Length: 525
Image 1 (cartoon, rainbow, N blue to C red):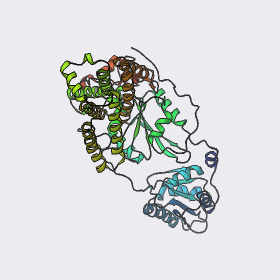
Image 2: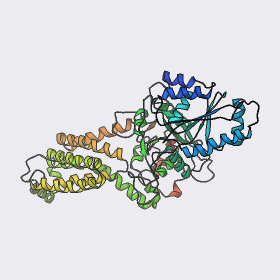
Image 3: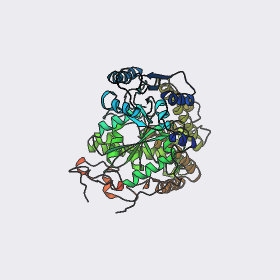
Image 4: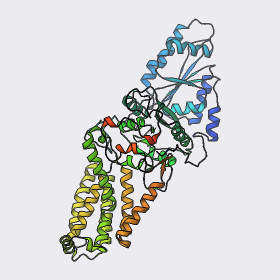
């Protein structure tokens, strides 16, 4: 059986995600003066915005003064008043008669007895304070204490957990990720209750400073894969990462391929299944789409529904998807090749029917196909960009009207409309949106090859596509795995989805630390 290790395919040198000189200077700054001086420093850096809230709480002579800093609209002001300010007032009342108390003593007292918040951290870094306050946390300063308490108080309006819009299923969970990374982590923890599930946190973007989480199971994922993902994330040097697609483009193995080398999804069940296979997932704050790596060609055709139905039904659906890939890629080019070069290969009755339908059409088959395909792509793009009710109308009515009008005008033949329609339906059956776009791009290349060389051109184009796929890698894993190199054990979940009783091992090509899906989890040969 072929064996290979996860190899380092990324050539860029590591760059710290917050390695600018300004970030280093801020990170090295410390607090230790008065509360007023510390808060004034932050107010100057932020240029005193109107939504910046400051409040000072004093316990009297001999007791260190406290200061609170937060952003209105990002922070929960009611929670701050009820839990932070009230805790401070209770502490000051309890130590009213103290002669003198240091900032460290006051912090110890708050931490042990009075501070009632659920989540906070302590930091001496000005950079951490700025990022946390701008993220909705509250900074608590204490006179004479050289660190700052960052208390979690985030509160802003966000989208609730809804059904995924891009990956609808007939049978399966109806929950999907949203734009809150905290909610997404909760959904993933609900799906996998394993104590070895790890969430490593990073911040990406010198200006945006978005929170990024790398998720994996410690005793399943290959350590080299985890380290490679972390290394590539640490090479990201960019102002902001508005969406996970930016991260995908920054860490992928090749930017020249039309095929997606990192799979994206907004389904928690799909992410959980990938993690249990030994893969690594990246989640970014502000987007519902998580990234799964490594990715193979086979995974682009698979859907979570394959595993929710019985194995016969799941296998049939998966076979239909492979047929849809072949139709989407080659159907128009086959029509062009047969009509233009190989008329003798068409059955006689069908040939007479095609000839009668094409009578009066002024364009050759290749021009006819390009006109219809370009029109279909324009309608598809317009349907996506327009509001949803109008977009559906444009996609359906526009296609019917334009197709019927083109046939009536004699610009295209009815058989060409059928070919294009079947091709469009087949492309919609591909689960991965990015993979569907790749096949749409390659469809035009096969059409050009068919118009020049006929069936020989299609064969040459397919050979070139296969060579390209065989050269691709995703985080050290060949793209055509488990077909090439052949991991025959994994073929039972490639085209045919075997019964669950036969899927007792994790994918061999992932080289997981624990390869057993059933039993005591100690693995097997």
